[in-house]
Image (cartoon, rainbow, N blue to C red; front, side):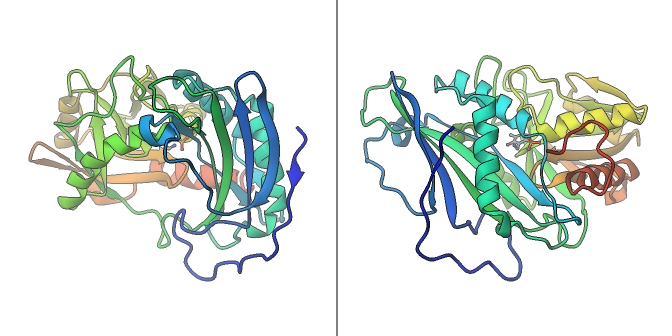
Length: 350
Ligand code: PMP
C-alpha cells in the first residue's frame, strides 16, 4: 500500500483529565476510496476534519455502512500493542460480504491501522486502564437514490483516546432482559457490525435506561426465549461450574473478547457450552443459587460483571451483586495480556 501523508498545519492539545469514551479524536485519520472497476485507491493519512457528504449519498438513505472496534495499548516498557487485529479484519470481511460492500483484504486493514497508530503514537494515553480506541468504518458514498449496491465507497480509520471503563475498578451492572423487541433473526444481519443493527437496538436500550438498568439482554428473534447477547457485549454465565454462552449462528456478533475468554476458561479446565440457553432456565438457575457468575465481554469494557437480571417483572441477583472470582480473574488476565504484563501464550499481542 502506498500511503500519502498530509501534514496538519497545527496539532491539537492532548486532552487532560478524564477521557470518557469516543469523545476526543486525534490529529490524523486514514482514508481510502473504492470505485467499481478501479478498486481501492488514494490511500492517505490526512488531518482529522469534518467531511463534505452529498445529501444523496446512499449511506444516508439505505445505511450501507460497516465498522469495527479495537484498541492500541501502551505497555509499561513503552511498547505499543494491538490485540488480535486479524480477528477484526476477518469479521470486517464477513460484515462487508453480507452488506454487499467491497472487501478490504486483511493485510491492508491491519497495515492501515498500524501506520495510523504509528503516526499517532503520542496519543496513546498512559493512565491506568487507558488506551487508544481504533474505529475503522466504511460507507456507500455513491450519489443515487435507487435502492442498489453502491459503486463508490469510502473507508476511514479514526482514533480516540479512551479512559478506563471502570475508573473505580470492575463493578457489577444491572441487566434488563427485553421480552418484546428483538435485535436479530437467523438469515438477518445480527452477526454483522453495521450501524443499522445499533439504530434498531436503541429503543430497547432506552427502555432499560428508564427502568434504571445499564444494558439490554436480547433474546432470539423467533421465540423470544433464548439468550443471545447484551447491548454491545457477548454474554456468559457460570452455571453449575460450566461456562455457558450463545453459539455463533448468525444472530450474535462473534466477539474477539468472547473468543479470547472462551480460550482462557478452557485453558483453566472449565467445561464450555456454546448453546441455546432458555431465559427460563437462566432465571431458574438464578433462583436456585446455581447461577454462580455472569458477565459481558467486549472491547470497550473487557469484562462487565452482571449483578442483576430483570425479566418480566422478576429479579434475580447474581453472586450477591459482587464481582465473581472467575470474572475478576478473567478481567485481570485479559487486561494483563493486552497491556503486556501477563505472558501471552496464544500470541494475541501484535
Ligand atoms: N456484541 C455486539 C453487538 C457488539 O457491538 C460488540 C462490540 N464489538 C460485541 C458483542 C463484543 O465484540 P468484541 O469483543 O469484538 O468487542
